[in-house]
Image (cartoon, rainbow, N blue to C red; front, side, top):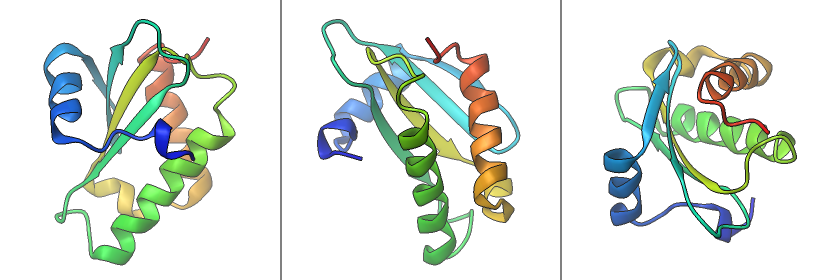
Length: 112
């Protein structure tokens, strides 16, 4: 995942939270915000300390990034996505995490 595809600044996160739409399932909450004239989608990740220790949090973030990398051709490029992992996401393996993420992105109408 390229650095240009990541949301890092707090102000950008806040913009997506305030102006975007949210959908959720038991494992993830996804905020989407449509951006005009944007060539690639951008994602921001948030995993609370309540989810687990640093190893578990980093594992979830790796799973999410890899899932987006594998689905990049199917996802709308003109949007920003902020994914928040819930407590139940800590117990998932990669394939289940990807399936749950696809489910919530389908509800959010993030696919072309």
